[in-house]
Length: 163
Length: 175
Image 1 (cartoon, each protein chain N blue to C red):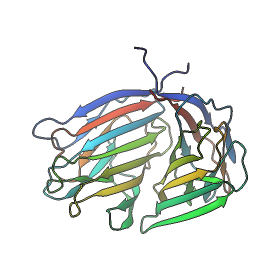
Image 2: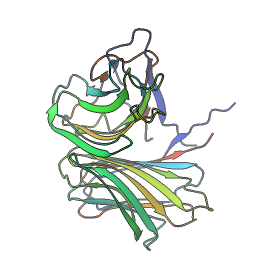
Image 3: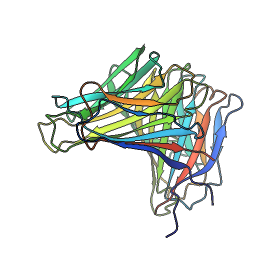
């Protein structure tokens, strides 16, 4: 039986200078899921937002569960123009974000993506996002809600293949 | 076809009598990220016990924020003053449901970089018992140290890991 590799690199970006956005394009539709891993320091307190396939319309919604070290909270946004991967109010220490895009190439379903957001100086949370489109995800535009991603920030996109 | 990127580097299954800690040492420096999967239970005489995580011989500069749910309420806590490890948890103790182990993942990106090291941690346990302990915990962790991570030690906050607890280290490569 041929060995099937299930965790395959699609693209990686390491910022040589401070940048406000990163785009992964021409994402192949040959995997089951996508995993996006982001690591770096932000220049301003803000969310890290995401738009798929260039869709800027109000087709996104998200539910957040978060903690700030003293209290837990939950909130929602509906019919907004972007998804959210993380938030940080800290501009000194790195954040780690691991996001899963489930059944991203299924043309019969809306797309759900889950993001675990971490900054040990500020915020820990989990986002559930919905993109109301049946299109296969072929590009991911990631941008800082304010400021930039500092030089040295990394963005790695993996494909998860089913057996 | 692109290259595979997820490699099993080491695995430990706790034997009879338990152990007070598990250490992955001599971690190869050729991967992008590290991922650790845990299935663990404590012999501590309580419903639950947390775990500690430390890197190399680093004894200061750790901090974390957690978000916890126990089936009835949610809470958040932190330690940002720099301890000798960060806490994750909770895992089941001896008064928890028999044979019920806590499961979770530690994800450490860019572990060889010259930056401070952050981590994402998820731990869960379910008891199938309305009065026994159940728990879900999300942690953001950081060590304010630029050294490459060459070893990782995971230990119970008290007591030992019981037999059949497992710890598996993976290397993730982005090329």
